[in-house]
Amino acid sequence: MRRLVILGAGYAGVRAAQTLTARLEEMEVVLIDRHLGQEILTEMYKVAAGHREPARVEIPLHRLLPHHRNLRIVQADIERLDWRRREVLTSRAAIAYESLLVCLGATPEYYAVPGAREHALTLQYLDSAVRVRRRLERLARRGGGHVVIVGGGLTGVELASEIASGHPGRFHLTLAQAAASILPDEEPRLAAYAERVLERVDIDVRRGESVRRVGEGGVQLSSGALLPADLVLWTGGVRGNPLPQEAGLPVDGRGRLRVLGTLEVDGCPGIFAAGDVAAVPGPDGHALPPTAQLAVQEGFRAARNIVRVMRGQEPQPLQVRILGMAASLGRGRGIARLGHLSLQGRPGQIVHEPALLRYLYGIGGLGLLRREGYLSWTSPPAATPQAKSDGASRLLGH
Image (cartoon, rainbow, N blue to C red; front, side):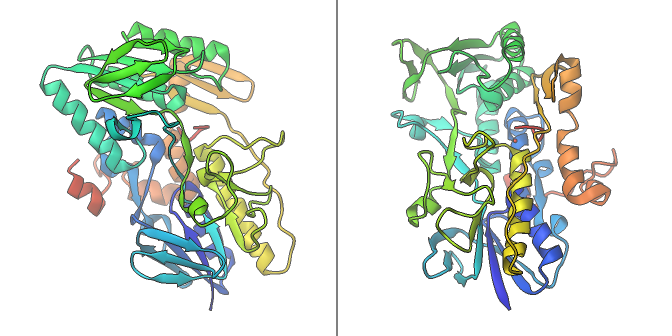
């Protein structure tokens, strides 16, 4: 049987696997990921702040992808990609393919800031969020301390708000943002409201100053100011997973695969890419922002185009549908943008609250919501093996 390999079981990879197994019975679909569950990355800030249990943000793949005779899920680390030989080398075996879909996601972008990689924690994966949670809990037991969050944007703002809400008065929180706005990609009115909310809960907002260095005891800004820090959290941006660049595939300046509007990797027949690892051109020619809702759309379109190519048809370009944006600011406050409508305060929070349910319903319907315990107050979702051992994006436009 012919084989198609999907690298990564994130938003794009899972949506693509669902689409392909339903439409491509004549080909084996192999989904490779280091985990046997999909981590809902847009919920990681809640895990970090202690407001969401890890088991509720990792959905077992067997529940997202019911048994199909032509689907094989491989749990392994992806070590190398030899695209000229059409082979993926994993920690378990070498897997040959006829077609490839790269959905490897992103890694933190440190912008060559000295000490950032060594001394700052991120929310890259579930285990990263759990690590942040444990550090915050240890600091809280010791009476608190200084926490510096480097990077604004939705992730930084939500993380700061959630920590302030979960540990009121416990930490001295600072949000350091290089741009002039803490939400540079959003409407100025919404950004101004978000900043007022942060300051109202005693979060020190430092705008317009980049980070020069991160050390064990603090963060030095470009102005020379030194921010003391018992914990540094890095939300300063992302770049594409390094594997495609290491394999010699075409990437842009942020390490993302250069793809056409059809999600085909430029100049590499048989290879498609979707999600945060792909620089997908938007209507204006610039790469679309890395968001969960776009990753889902890209995974679906890439899968459909793989089917079309297999059947001798022309692939079709991605038609982007931006549903909007919603973000939590803690304690019943939020911001949201739906088309031309902007919301703040409790209305913004109401739009944000069902984001996880919308995503789960979109990929698995009411059955998935019921199996994960979201339709019952008395049946919590079962923990995955990883979540049990641990003990322990904002799907609308994040």
